[in-house]
Length: 211
Image (cartoon, rainbow, N blue to C red; front, side, top):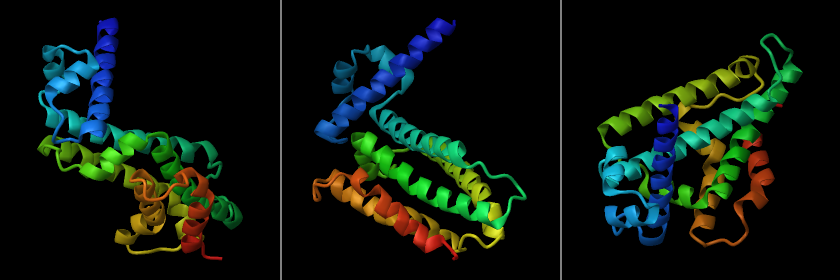
């Protein structure tokens, strides 16, 4: 049973990888189920068993891209915190700086490592998601935001990080990095995104530090 499950999971990932290649080369609208089937080597039955439609494949690819980035960010944040509840202001200030810079740095790293996936996410903006996929993504976004709130909670309470309206956090944290990433992915700038990670992360921290 486990062997069958692992094989099924592998086939699913192969279909998603093939779909991303097709979407990248031909665009979402021009890609067909048949082109994905040929690229993946999957049977029609297997393809429909796992997804059911081209739109469902695109939706799954979008959601898994977001999940992949969230997982990478959480792993990065948890690997270097080292601060516990009750620690003093100096450590909390260090945690706040580490957290802000890690968010920007991980964002740049993920896009640099997955340019096709990132371009797909930027270009589609989740427009193909069905109602169940939208509900799932909304729940995962909420859980991720709650995780980040808790990560910064004590540093914020101790005044080691500025407080802004909730609607501004995304723009202030990764707005500049996102703008440069879009330009790089579209070929409007040549210098790779990861060459400017330190500058972008430092700029974000200057917006949030209180001292």
